[in-house]
Image (cartoon, rainbow, N blue to C red):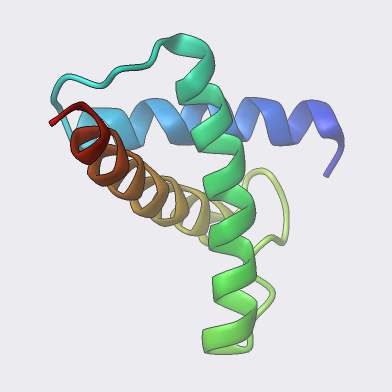
Length: 88
């Protein structure tokens, strides 16, 4: 997948993750994109390590989207945990 594909996938995965975990975050649109892109990479890596599958097959593959969204949810949860401790 090209870098543009990763950015688009990360943007959409970040938006979906934010919709699945609603709430106030001390970050804006750019942070959502960065969490989504990082989550897509994390999800792909976890899929390879844990399940021994190539979860980043292509942009339109279901496994790619599931891996990206799960990775984004993990990173969004970690970000909220760190951000809430820093502000308390």
